[in-house]
Amino acid sequence: MKIKHIYIFLLVFSIIFVLASRSFSEELIKGAIITTPQNVLSVGTGEKIVINLGKKDGVIIGDILNLVESDDDILIGNIGKCAVIKTEDSTSVCEVIKLSAEVGKGDYVYINRLEYSDPQIDPIAFMLLNEVIAPYEPQKNIRVYLHDIYDEKKNTTKLSELIKGEIAFIFQQKKRVAVDTTSLKGYINYPDHYFNTDTDKPKNKSVDILKNSMKRFNIDVAITGVYTKKDDIIKLKLYIVDRKWQDRTMNTILNAKNYLNALTETIIPYEPFKEKELVKYSFMLYEKDFLPDKDEQRAIIKHESQKELKFKYKFEDGKLRFNRINPGDLTLKVNREDIGGIQKEVELEKYFEKGIKRIFVSFVPTLSHNEDEIMQLKKEIKKEIILDLKNEDNISIEMRLDATYEKEKIDIKIVRKNIKEPIVLKSVATETDRKPAIELYRD
Image (tube, rainbow, N blue to C red; front, side):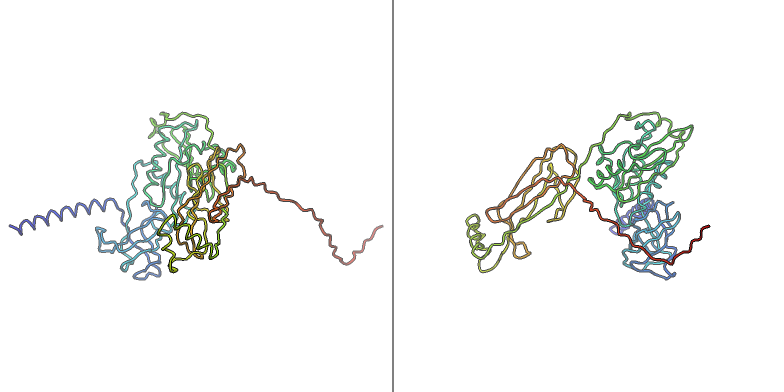
């Protein structure tokens, strides 16, 4: 009876496993290695292979594919990974980045199948995806802000939302692409504010302002667009603003017959729009360390021990030593936003919205021995100021942190930079080259 129960259990388990494997494989697309360098039998980590999956299969540069052996038809024995570094319509070049067994021609690769929901828009979205990632290194993750798509009257329609939604749907299936639809709300205007609609050339001044906002929110690429309808054709123009590479447009068409209802339904009617303005502030940090002599060190230990009994024992018998007190644990906030990445005497530039700014700076005096931090004192030095400037151009904030024991302080100085490039007038020297005389005859 017991053996029968085991047999039934194994049978049920096998059925579940087969069904799960089939379901798993349906979510994947499988290809094979068709070429290896010099047609060697097997390759190792760092070598390149050619596979029979390409753009038509939804593969893009930067995709990571799993490697399995040729006898693994159900794709469960992962033996490595490869990264796509070049794509064609039906093939791709991959670099092997991880391997636990030999792999070569005939072995399989697989990746999650790219899903499509709209047969017209999704291929366009995939073309756009390839256009966006083209300038970037395969290993670079890309943060994309997806803005609204408008009709020719700058309305947002049901079709606008459909196009935007399908672009997001395709982009979000790729791990190297992060899609953002909120950060730049209020900072990005209608497409004709950034591009000449007749020539597609960018308006550099407006684009530069947008790129400052993109930098502020760590956006690599911003996408917006506009469409027009004529007869049964929808002409769709997508604008790509790239913070690091060339700005460009992509033109394509849709069949209007498939979107008649979506074309006529206005979701958000046109309203004049003024984007929020950002201003650039620069920060400069200066620090003054305190270098106590032996007597001052003993006095500090005695004084701090009155606040904390354990303090004295930490420095008994030379267990710990210090010869410097420096500003540590720096905090810099602008309107409650933490500003990180600031280094001593290295200018840091940040963008903020125009308006009143509350600036908070603090540090903790820290005992150090040479370059090694030992411990922090039980105090925090703070300073806060408010800036209410009508003209916020070229503002620099200098922060001077003084860690002198019992005289710690923070000074904040606001400076407006005025760059002058004097021109020194110099005469141009004349040099004469002597050449042989030319005989001149006149009648």
